[in-house]
Image 1 (cartoon, rainbow, N blue to C red):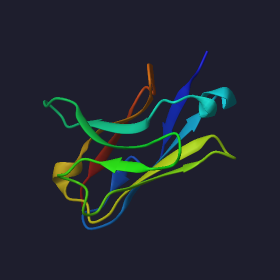
Image 2 (image 1 turned 60 degrees about the horizontal axis):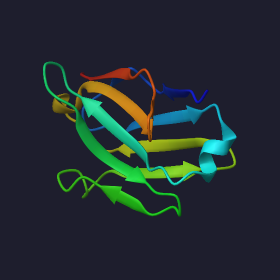
Image 3 (image 1 turned 90 degrees about the vertical axis):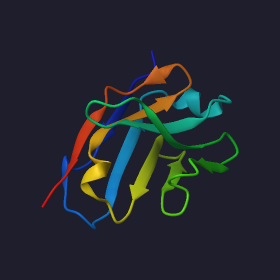
Image 4 (image 1 turned 135 degrees about the vertical axis):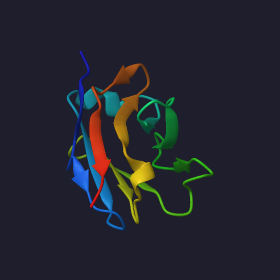
Amino acid sequence: QVQLQESGPDLVKPSQTLSLTCSVSSGSIGNSYYYWSWIRQPPGKGLEWMGAVGYRGSTYYSPSLKSHISISRDTSKNQFSLQLPSVTPEDTAVYYCDIGPYWGKGTLVTVSS
């Protein structure tokens, strides 16, 4: 059973950097060909794919976020991370990490002063 757990602050001030980490319970998943993705859902809106890191470490980002998002993966720790600098209240959302069919439960991050 693969389990994913998002972690990070639940409140971030505008203009600061939102940093989240996804911890993965199964080491074997790192040998799969799945993309390791971050997805978010603002209140009252649909899911938004933000970006992913692939099996070989290549990164892929949503065009709308590409200019400032960063996703990285640490295979030694079975973790991958999201950094979103210069956040605004519009970045308030539930943030999910996803690897293939496996999803974390999500974490609500509120951007507010």
